[in-house]
Amino acid sequence: MQPTPRSTTFVFSISIAAILFVALLLAPSAEARSSTITRTIDEQSVTRASAVVTRSIERPRTQPESVARPAVRTRYEPSAGVYQPEATIITLRDLGLLQLAAHDLFDVDRETEIDRENGLLDLSTLLHHGEENIALGGEPRNRENAFIFTVAATYGEAYLRYLERGFTPEQAYERTLKQYLDDLARVYELTFGEPVPTPQVGEVTMTENVALRTIHDLLPGTMVVAGKTMSVIDPTLIGTKLTDKELAQPSAVLDGTIDEAFLDVTIIIPPDMVLEIDLMERDSSFAEQFQTEHSFEYFLSELTDGSYDTDDDVMHYIRDLFAKAWPHAQLD
Image (cartoon, rainbow, N blue to C red; front, side, top):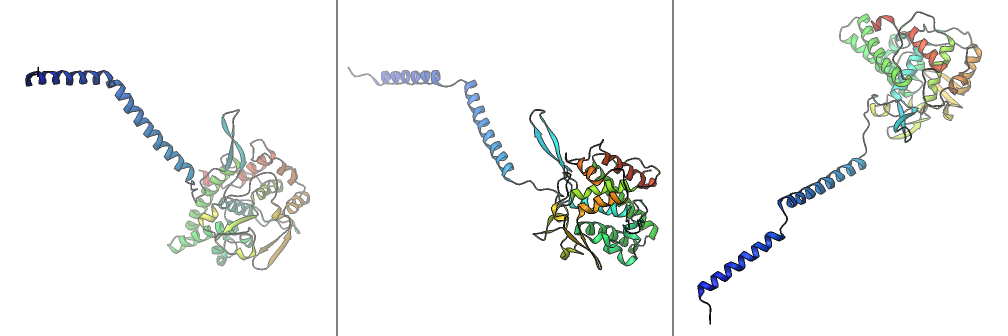
């Protein structure tokens, strides 16, 4: 017997209900669906994060062209779980400033044994060598390499700009000196690992002179100028002002040695002074000539660990030197 249309509808309804019932039994719960969605989102997040990390690793980090970057290279010590100092490295700008300060403190004639400087950080090396030389960095020694020349000439130009703006020579000097000492205080701490010492009264000594000469350890043999690797003392660079990017190049690593490029070198000091020197021998013989309390080799030996340490003898003499050389009024 054929079913009536009503019976067909009833059977169809029961079939639909059965299918829906089975579907509900097989479908994941709301919690399961939420978990699946969460896992999907998490997987997508991990994928995106991984891509970001990959891009960060692949993209080289740019170094600022200023000098505000660490002076100490570090290495990871797994046993301690921390980064430990490896070796002091500063920038060419910092090194140029330290060399300028050394020239500001000492200018010893090896023949007469007379020091033509006054042992003070007062920019006499820049301003006491003729007005016509101020824009050129002052005394000729400040042109012996491009980075000390650039640093010295920058202060000279700043002084002259103050005069052009109507400041008196005294006001121009005060402003230029303040900038010099502010910069030097930062570089002192960066290089020697401690703040500038409290000023004290006293005469600077030749042992302190020899101690400060250890910054020659930081002189690199080469640098990049206009995209070309050149000797630091290439005579064609005399009178060349470096860019900020070039000044941001690293110094040599502090390691208790003098770069071999300076063991047999010709240094030209304008206008017509030519020196054939072994820088290591020159610094060593200076200590012998003036019978300093420690030899230059001894001071260098304290730097083989890559840093100026607080208790090193070399640091004791450098600290005393800057304490006696720093203008008292500038720290008030």
